[in-house]
Image 1 (tube, helix red, strand yellow):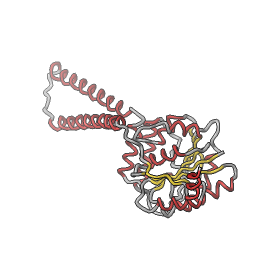
Image 2: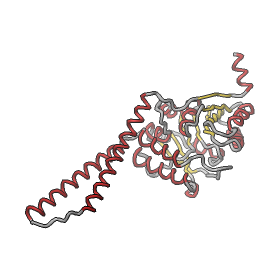
Image 3: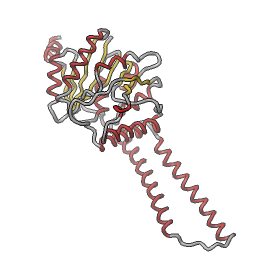
Length: 320
């Protein structure tokens, strides 16, 4: 059987080499699988692509894919999934946080009751400090509320999946890929297994607040209409409150003959709240319509600039 390992690479010039070396060693020691490693360079500003070419020359299992522009981690994953041929596909980070030595804990958990397995870290390793922690928690909340993720399922970047599930998710051609959402809509048999979590070898997370918000927006606009329903429910709720308040005023004025004060402050507050809700609802509708427009224009998920499989492999292919 063939095991495919997909690694999106960004700012990983100094970390991807040791990660690949550990993967090759781990799979060789296990001895059950042939191996292919797909390194997807997401147009990183460092010399990561040069390092990927060097690794492809060094290891027969390594294949490099270079993006023409930075498209984000999930687009890079989709490129890797489409290029993979393995019976089992594992995705992991490029910075050493996902120990390759733990890989077969995920792979061996796959079975009749598990089509996809996410690595579950110890509590202290689940959420990094700073922006990445906020983004991870926000992503988890979105997945529970809007995508139907079980509350006890932890979504990490360390994932093992069956070929059948991979073949299903790569059918998605939309320009806003969200891999976790694709897995959640493809199978109910998604499990966790406990793995070790290590500190990144070097540097900090490549996610900024803007990119995390963009990922969050992808999560609910591409795979859920719940926000639109919530805005509609809020509209009905405020309409109901308004009608009840009108009846209260009429009763006070016509039946009880109560003097009613102007209450300008309360009126302005209500106008601000209702106006804000209207603008939020319009913004949500605009977001959905804009994404429909971009999808109809057939905007690509990513654009591949180059594929490199090593000098020897490339020359062998050209002689066929």
